[in-house]
Length: 151
Image 1: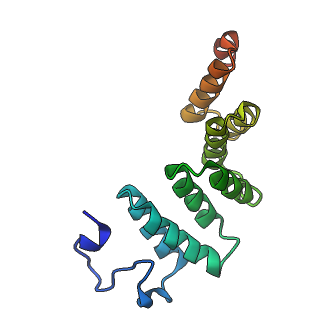
Image 2: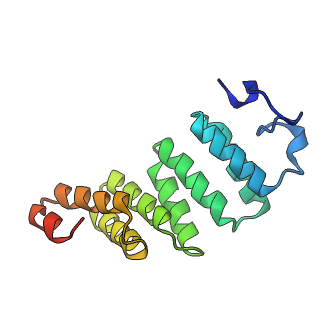
């Protein structure tokens, strides 16, 4: 079921093409983008994120969400650029891990490992990042390091 088909409490359905969206806050747009992502509607999510960035080019949350959309669309270089840009303003483990995963997907295992280790440095209990490190070490044939790294 598309978001527009869902019952709504309010009377305005926000879409990328709706003329009534000019007064919608960035937070509302990003919440809607997240719902679009949950429903597999990446183009609609992308439109919401791009609208936020058009109004506020330094909005880190919009950059990160747009990076997630790029990942879902297998646009790894776009995702890398967005996550890298977001990390200049705010370092968080999820963005570092997503960046590492994008580098892994493009075959840049050095950068992938660097980013994933950075995510673990910021959040030592971040299991997904530790698993990512193990995956990169395995891909590099560094099997003995997997156990020593406590990943």
